[in-house]
Amino acid sequence: MRFPYARKAAPEVLATARAQRWDPAEVVRVLLHEEVVGRDSATRRNRRKSAGFPSGKTFSSWRGEDSTISQATQNALMTLEWVNRTENLVIAGPSGTGKSHFAEALSHLAIEKDLRVAWFTLESLSATVGRAKIDGSVSRAIGRICRSDVIVIDDIGLLPVSHETSEAFYRVVDAAYERRSVAVTSNIHPSGFDTIMPKTLATATVDRLMHHAHLVETSGDSHRLAEALSGRGVIPLT
Ligand SMILES: Nc1ncnc2c1ncn2[C@@H]1O[C@H](COP(=O)(O)OP(=O)(O)OP(=O)(O)O)[C@@H](O)[C@H]1O
Ligand SMILES: [Mg+2]
Image (cartoon, rainbow, N blue to C red; front, side, top):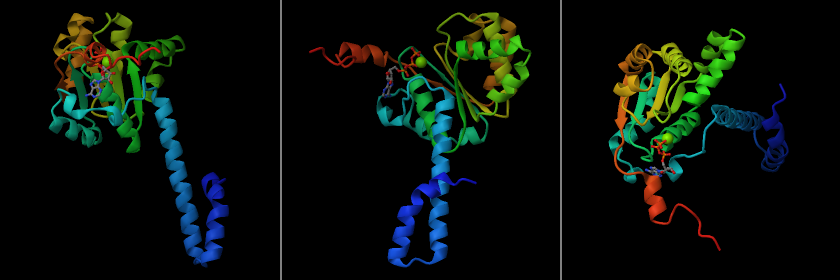
């Protein structure tokens, strides 16, 4: 059974146990605890890696008060109860208003809470499904994606969407419907998805996506632009 974390902790634990004359049961308890904690943190590390996050942004660098998402909504989403209820999340609003940052921070939080996350853009989702098409394993690939508790699809609406990509988007939303949480960030409101993708696919996708969804709208000016204009976008050259 290997027990790598218990073995690593053993010399120190045993030395302490001898010195302090611990009860043998206590030694076993402490070593097993080390093992459990070690395994859990390794699982989280692996999940963080396999999620494929874009930038590693978390709530530690998030300023809730600067966001146009109400504090109450932020708090409610941060409980992640919506994930346990397999509800969806759609964050829509203009560029640079913190949609991706907020979605990624929530995703990191989900991993801390022992949930699995898969992060996609429409392009990477389409590439994944496209690759599976070559050897006829699309259903399996979708099944694998739907093993995650939260499936994030970031930045919809920035680029025109091909039929293939729309189809991949539809397939994932359909497969996740009422089983998994799908979180989407978009520059356009879901009611306008038919302007960037084929109408029939857009209708079917949005219908499933929005049935049990929290729609969060951001507004205002780009944080990127504000940082750039105030000179906080770069570290000054020396
Ligand atoms: N409330 C906030 N607290 C801290 N940083 C923020 C906040 N809102 C936005 N930012 C920062 O502003 C920048 C732009 O945010 P982000 O990339 O999340 O925007 P977006 O809404 O996804 O934009 P786009 O639609 O162009 O993808 C990022 O560097 C992000 O970290
Ligand atoms: Mg974004």
